[in-house]
Length: 350
Ligand SMILES: [Mn+2]
Image (cartoon, rainbow, N blue to C red):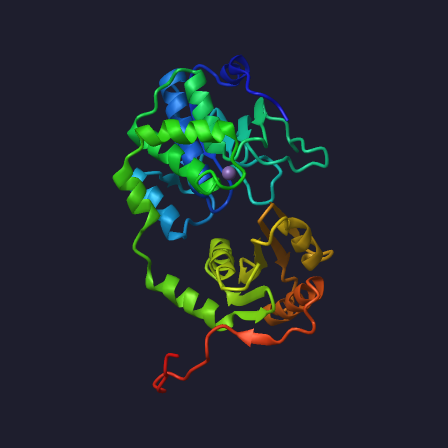
């Protein structure tokens, strides 16, 4: 872990050239907010232009709305010529994280992140010129807010809105993993953000595919006592799985929700809990057993299992058995959430 040293940050950058800004695959609001803030800082304080290179697709409707309404657009990854750039800045992720692949052949100048590092000691796998990694922050956007204010750069409305989205989504409006620094950033950015845009990002139009996915989730979900288990087939992206897990945790009487779906040769899983004092990470670790990787803390955990030539059904069966066993629910009846009905059949709402 390292603290913020403004002189070291400034020294990491050359006096001219163009910079690539990256975050993890399938960027979320915190990654997008931090990118926008760093771009503004580099331009205003150091006179450096930069481009975003975004990996993976942004599919969650809220995130896509943020991208579109704030004009956060990346270059196609294959189009980056290393000769055009002097360095990379990585935010909300670190070199060595499996979901992060900055374009090769360009030195990493700076890393700003609030996750623990990939190595056993929590350190970075590759040493960049400057690194500021501090897991006491609830969001990387809070760190970038601190950076802007330390350099006395006043964000414009667009940048403040982007950073505000990052802080509030990563901390769930200061209710998850947020500390005093996040609270200060939240209040300060809120004053400067565009509320109409925030409202649109919170409540975007949803495509038919979202309703189809939720329909599939409802018909797939089975409860085993306090556990809602929603192991889907193929899904468009890992965020869908997280969204389904969040949603079905709200089912009355459920204190654990495990959702999964296949994407890019991996079976993605998300676990959520609202049981008092429960920790999702060890439960996820136990359910995945010796395969796959996972991360998380507190009420949420996410992971992935390589299909490795197995069918999706086989992996779903294994995960269901392990989850039921882990929570000691072998004696509980398996129940559907919604009645299975044939199209055209008369249904009576009770
Ligand atoms: Mn984050």
